[in-house]
Length: 302
Image 1 (cartoon, helix red, strand yellow):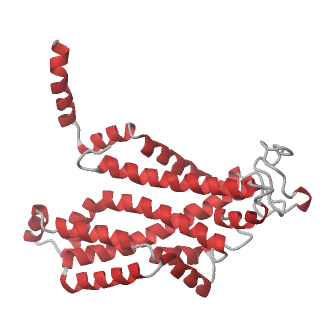
Image 2 (cartoon, helix red, strand yellow):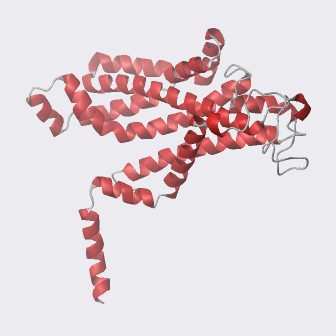
Image 3 (cartoon, helix red, strand yellow):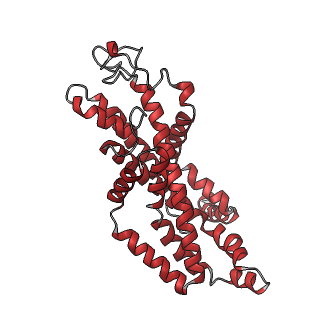
């Protein structure tokens, strides 16, 4: 009777005693999607960084005598090539590992470039308003009116396909969501009391933007970054699949799918393995972004 009557009070006291950081950690420990997504992204990142160490073979090494060897779980497979080999006798596991470097590198680099562009435009437009806001709205309208993937194909084809080109082109085409979120939140925050207090003691606009407003946008920016990174990874794979992205012999998951599609009815692993890796990475990044959004939501959604 006593335990039942005091348990609600005890629970309320526990919630009140927790700091915002402690509440986030507590929610993160019970959020399965965040844990799964974070674990997969961490593993993929380590695989990409340690590719020269953990890859059993060079991704470019060809051996036509060992072409189209099946994976170890299929008939004719061997542990010498766990995921089999491709049409040129290259080890498929090694190419898959090195392909993670391309997907993670392009995804992170383009999302970071888009973040810098979008957050900068959003901060200036949301804080200054007036002409700056109208100019930002015009840029946003132009951006949304253009099909991003087709424009990326045209730009990459015109400039020349390379990993650096992919990062720059995709980054310049994926800033709109950063800009919308940053501008909306900045317009709300600039009217709050602590911003007025900072302005009254003589803080410059630069100080207010970087020390008062931007730190309070970090959670929203991280969420948008994770979601945009997933979109960029898909677009990079699509461009490589269509032949205007990463060029042979560089290992890319989209390029591996394109190279394996001709033999997919006889050797389905050529498409299934890189396709599954791409699906798993994009799913993990989206789950990570959703999890960050849930644990940072002020209403305590889970």
